[in-house]
Image (cartoon, rainbow, N blue to C red; front, side, top):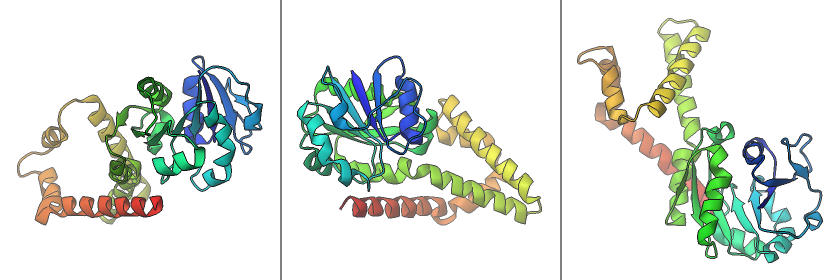
Length: 258
């Protein structure tokens, strides 16, 4: 299968590097100065030689897509499979622009750029059974893929995993600030907070235990961790905050999708 990557930014480039040796990779990105090793630059979609199966991965910013959608119809006419990693553009919007229902909408997150992400995917009306395996393979370099039964779930996915990395970063910033206010030098507080964040994430990824169990392993009855967690859990403070954060992000996702 030939793969046409439209947009070779951090995420697109990470995927293209993972395809090396398994697919012929064509890249359309007038702004890209360096292509992933093995990638072939394409300056116009008309330059793509007719051949076998073609998958088109849309990795541009969503505001760029309206300017190129019509020009991609020639590829839709060749029965290409389209895979979008653009936020906010629905299956209906993709289908209307491309003139094809063989489309898959996905929502990755930023750790996908280093192969540590997770991507949710939902299929369009004309996606074939074999396309699911193709999409799984194309997205494998970014991390695991989960399939949704209902496109409406994509807003909650966006709010949880799509935006989620920023929430963890923000909490780590707040933790470092609190450490400074408790008497630590700012650079040391950030070093400790950041290493604790990445270490805890690595432990959660390596240990199959439930997160509640991992939390209990750190928490001695009546100890320091228990005292801190009590502040989080008082009046369900942490749960109410998380719900408000996810609800706000999901509502904005629905607004952007129209």
